Structures are given as C-alpha cells and as structure tokens.
Image (cartoon, rainbow, N blue to C red; front, side):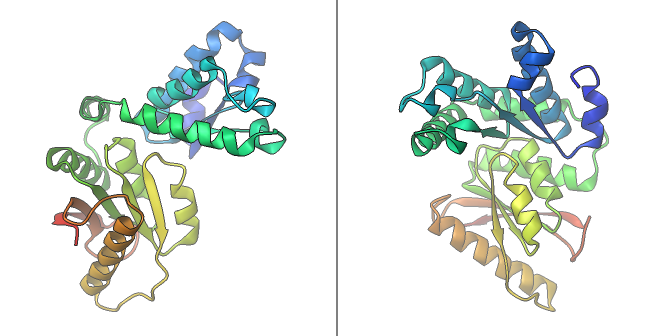
Length: 256
C-alpha cells in the first residue's frame, strides 16, 4: 500500500493512516515517515485523510494519557490530518469521555499553533495549473478570508466539492457548508474546518432569493453556534445557478 500509494490516492475519496497495521507491514521506525508522506500527499491532492490507531491507547485503562500520546495527536494535526480517530479507547475503554475530551482539547491547541497564511501559500504553489473554475474560486475565497481576517467562509454546495476544495487550502476560519443533500452533509464532516448544515427548506423558484435565504440561515446558525460573531466579515461562495459544477461567484459580506 505504501509503495503504490500514488495509484491508490488517485482512485480514492479519502485515506485512513492506520499506524498499528503499518507497524506490522513496515519497520516501526519507518511508520512516522509513511504517515507524514501519506498525509502530505493527501493534502496536496485535496483528499480527506484520517490518522488512526493507538492515538491515546493508554486511556483504555487510565484516566490520563501519556505525554507522548498527546504529542502524537498534536503532531498528526500539525502534519495536516483532517481527522484523528479513537478506537479501543472508546469502543471498550474504561474512560471514553475522558479520551474524547483529551483529543478534542489537544486538537484545538494544535490547530491554534499553525501559521495558516504560509501553509496556504505552499499548498497553492503545489497545485498544478491551470486550475478549474471551482478550485480557482476556492483559492480566492481562502485568500480573501486571510486578507480580511474573516470570521467564516460560507459555502453553498450540492455535492460537497466546493467545501472540500476550500478545506484543502486550510483557511484559519471555520467553513460553513450549507447543503440540501443529507449524504453531502455527512461526508463534509471528514474535511478539516468544515461545519455542515442540512438545509431542509423547499427550494425557491427564484434563484437569487433562494441563495439569500440560505445565506441568512448560514449566518444565523453560525452566530448561534459561536463560530463567528455579528459584524464579522464573512466570505461566501455560490453558483450562478443550481446544479453541479456551477460555482463561480465570491462575495464578501458583514454578518448580520
């Protein structure tokens, strides 16, 4: 799998880096290199990557993790993992809530330690040119969010592709994804920084009125959930009409 990773990555929607299994197939001393290589390639490709197994293993039977385990979780975030996953700690462990709380707190601190503008520039420079329209808009949205110190990026999406591309370029602010497709809302959870909201309101026949209604809903939910505050700059991405592949519009607004 490691040797054929490029071929696998081109065909998959996402990757799970299961270090426990890797440690059986390759030397233990090489697992960290394989982890960093696979996560980096997933980041460049814009594919979701999950880092898993033995993250907080000692918390299966102990209420506190080892310092090495906390560093391991933090380094997975700094490497660029979209998700980190617990296994036995919550499936059969004696302290499942404590394990989840520890991982949550560690992830928040690790994310706050990232310098996002240089990371964005590096990912943008590694992207092959020319880019498709949707990706170009995603790049512009993240750039605008950095320049404006935006409180959030709101994405109106059908398939989740636009949300995935925005997440690829690692904005510092949260990405609010509004979709009428429940499966898309579930899948978007796998991408870093994305907060999906399932929008159940019937579609308005007037496209712009429908867009404005979804925007108001996204702003209201974002403020209610504490993702940003009233008066913050919000960057919005939308399409010029409904359906897939029509994302081409970027707006910069004030949350109200």
